[in-house]
Image (cartoon, rainbow, N blue to C red; front, side, top):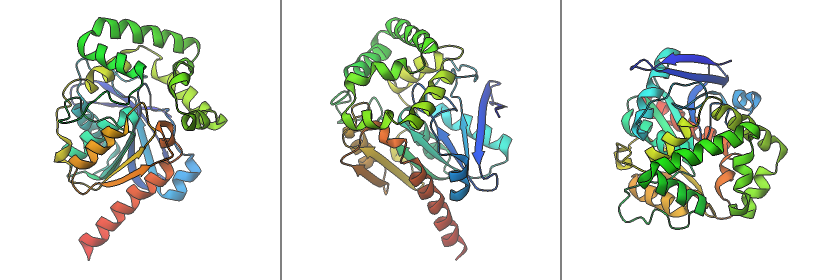
Length: 298
C-alpha cells in the first residue's frame, strides 16, 4: 500500500514498504527511469533476511511531486524526511543504477543516520577528475547525457516521446535497448519474473509525466552537490565488468575515491545482474550494521 510523506519544502513523496516491519530498515533507491515498484526481493525473502525495505518515487516519478532543478544531493533530505515519518533514527541505503548516485548522497550527507550503504552499477560524477565519462557507454546513453548537458530541449522532447511510448507498452524502453545489451543482460531480462517486475516498474514511473526521467538525466550531467570522498560509513560498491550503461571505469573511479569501500567486480556480469544480486547485498547491509552495533557495545 502506498503512503505519502511531505518533504521539508512541502512536496509529496510517495513510498511503500515490504518485509519484516521489525527488521533493519533499508531504503531502496530505484533506477532511471524507475519507481517505488522497481525490482525487489519477495516479502518472504525480506522476512528471512530480517529486512524492512522502503522505496519511494523520486521527485517527478510516479506520484511524487516534481522538484524542478533538483540535484543528486537532494535525495538525502528526501530520504531523511521519509525516515522521520516512519520513526527511523538509523537505516541503510541501497541504490541500483540511477539510484546509485542518490544512495551515495545519503551516505555522504547523513553519516549520523546511515549505518551502511550499497551502490550497484552506478555512474560516477559528471565532473569526475581523470575519468573519460563516455568511454565504453552505449550510444543511446551518450546521446541522452550530452543532450542533458548541452541541449535540454532535445532531451525533453526525446524523453517525453519515450514516456508516451512506454504508456502504450511499458517494456518499450527496454526493448529499444536490446541491440545495445550484452548477451548476459539479455539472458537476465528474458526471465519471466524479472520482466514482470520491470514492466510494473516502468509503468508506474511515467504514470503522470516524464519529469522524473528528465530531471534524473540533468542531475547526473551536472554537479552532484557533494564529493563521494566525503563518505565514511561502510559502503559496498558492486559492478559487472561487462556493463555498457554504467561503464566499469565509473566503478573504478568511485572505488578509488571512497576510502575503505568494499568493492566487488563480477567479470562475467553486466548491468542487469544488479537485480538478482540484491538479496545478497541486503544481507551485507544488515551484517555491517550488526557488526557495528556489536563493536560499539563491546
